[in-house]
Image (cartoon, rainbow, N blue to C red; front, side, top):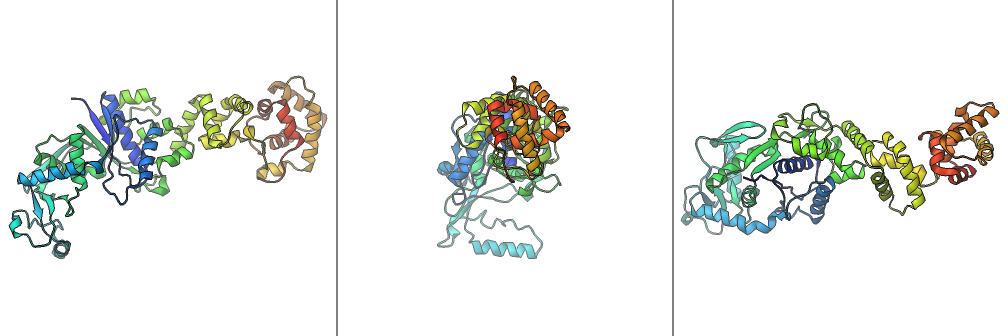
Length: 464
């Protein structure tokens, strides 16, 4: 049987880290087995589902490189199919109409709490016919859950897990207005889409038992289940925005590469020996359920930065040039692109994100309009006068490469009775606007003779 997995996000908010990892695991499992990875948008909550959230989900998956097979399925468009299944269960005597009013249900729950009992629905309409129905009350449809024994799930991550059927309620399948519930829609869609493997967070484990009851009532073979422990923050608490639980688009905007995000998310709860970095090909070849741990993983921004730095160093220089230029939002001339391309081998090992890389490369792209606080202290009036003399001294240099420039600046410093740093530091400030940069002679060579001399003639003034 061909493997079919699915990712089924609800478009009521951003595509968060946990959802991205779930999508990645499903994508890898399908690709590993030569199967299909499907996308279903569970947009049945019409009040909270938005086109913007749907677009963010699709864009986020595409940015991560997680392509799905076929067109995405929208659950809201299948409501009549879901309702038809519920009606067929009523006809088969495996589900029933419940005519309890909201007031009756609340009274029922309050009494159960007062008596220390479960607040589950007490099944008062389970064996009663519609002939007893009160006038003017629209019924819901409830499943007839088994009353004895237990339901067992052979979970691909958790192992065999059992739940006493006495802990299952007669869940609602159709609301009083005839709309299907989440539990019904998920089961029908998974069955109709041919899903063979449901791989999701372990907060859905209880749902798996309830959904299994529905599969059994319809005499359908349930998919294999595998429930992944959730992601926690670095303090062990449930992941939240303060830990970095942001939409995937936020990580893209913060300068992370998609391959770095995939690698980092894969290591959140899955391992392959001591390997830390994986090509996409290796990840597909190696991924299996046995590598998923049973304990929650911890989201660590410092670790993500280190992983991203690794991929930045390995990234193609031309690709990084394009990404940096795209981030500017303005056209970049061929001469500046060439300058940036030449500098990339020097710049990228120093950066952890594309934002850091862009900041480090900014002096190559545009002339500095101001100075960092430290650079402003370095570039005092005496230093500016010194640089004017230096510009005159090096302007006639025949060669403009690192070795020749270092020799010329050293000779100038010695002639002034100064150490090299006393000249190099203000030189760096004038050319880059900062107190930190790649080697100053590398900077001069990258900028070229004309640009370097132009900046020395009019160095930036004041703090940026």
